[in-house]
Image 1 (tube, one colour):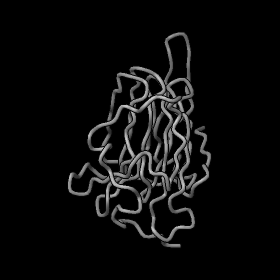
Image 2 (spheres, rainbow, N blue to C red; image 1 turned 45 degrees about the vertical axis):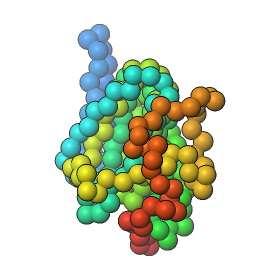
Image 3 (cartoon, helix red, strand yellow; image 1 turned 90 degrees about the vertical axis):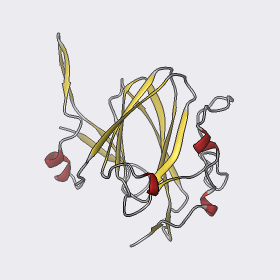
Image 4 (tube, rainbow, N blue to C red; image 1 turned 30 degrees about the horizontal axis):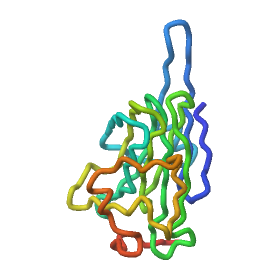
Length: 188
């Protein structure tokens, strides 16, 4: 049976699928819609993405898509490990600007579910780390947004061990949360 654990922010979950192993290797259902719907997680995914980061310290994020192309993400690591982060960007939310982090690894076989209204990012902890994630809406360049990974108002404690992250130009130029569009509103 799949394990589902709520994290410190509403709607963010760690999901750990069961791995069935024998002398041949293993088999795992990494997403089972009916089983997770029975646990209160009902999402329709439409696209899978796969990234390779060649070095430790590659930081991707903090990314999100604005409505009507907002995405729920289910993120897992198939090789290596990452420190994965979700940030509440729903204006008016009691946890607006708060973040939660979780180490994901191929060894732990855990995943993180990041709902709409959250920015998402990760930093690789090992070289040649591969991340696979499902999204509930296709990529839309028009709705693609980002927030600075090092926004002091958010204060993510990235495990960089004193080294500078390896960033894309897009991530280097992302705005602070205070300067980003108010794409999401909290609804109690």
